[in-house]
Length: 373
Image 1 (cartoon, one colour):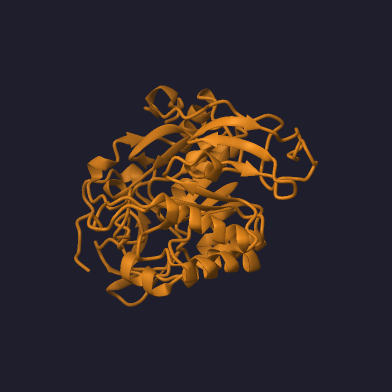
Image 2 (cartoon, helix red, strand yellow):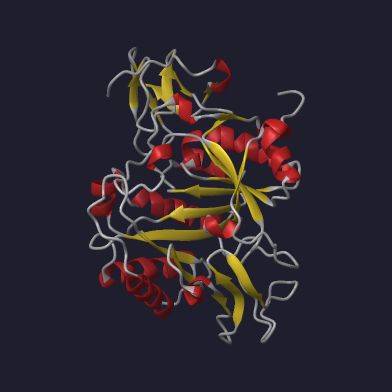
């Protein structure tokens, strides 16, 4: 691993971390994720944002962001967590996976400090979310695992103002930091990129089992609302056999109520020669999931009203109609039940849905800065 200068990041953005240990007099190991990067003084890990400085691992992007935007919560995607509400979304830079198909590569693979154009304290972010009418703040665009200290501080500030937090993550994290991060989080969408370890290693540089461990942990040991997304790539992870195995595992290990999103791939980053996912592939995946008992399965990145809507698993009635990110129907009672047969729908719902719609609103946070920033 090549040594990289740590100059160019302000001292205010560099904070100590907990998950590391000294290997010898010249190297320190980062214990945040299963990569276990072993770093000499001045080196950064594969994620680029955690580095060895003075014999300890530090985070170099605390309080810095690649941008803020108010999105519909369904864009995360979360279809069963506060539907119709706006979410203040932001990320930093860097990632601990190396996905050849990354669709946010300009952020997740950034090696430029200039990417971190916006500075915002946790209190400023909470103030902005409240002022903008957001019910939650999402850590997204790149993986919050790599900036977990910043994410945790933001989550604490948000919780103090009654605002929830969402992690959009690949789930590639070690057990102890995983527990620390997710005790601050209210909802998560985890990218289950494949159900094949060879896929993970060849196309992401990671492994499958730690992601499965994170999913099981979230479902069985926390109160975090969980949804899963799998990006289907033609010829790579879209076979009937793999979709059968994946969906059967979800039902047996996580239960029938965990929503599953199958999203369409489009050529990007280092896979420009791979064709886009045909809509028929998503429909086939959704049918396999439903046949295996998944109650809530969705298609994404394509125009498919039926595949984006929520139905009662008992009577089949339409519960939440969606046209892209615009809500077209709401047939849930105030306590989250089907209006037709009174069967509960799994999720985190309020007495009425939000009305944000499909808008996307970029935000600069300077006007929301706290006096103490």
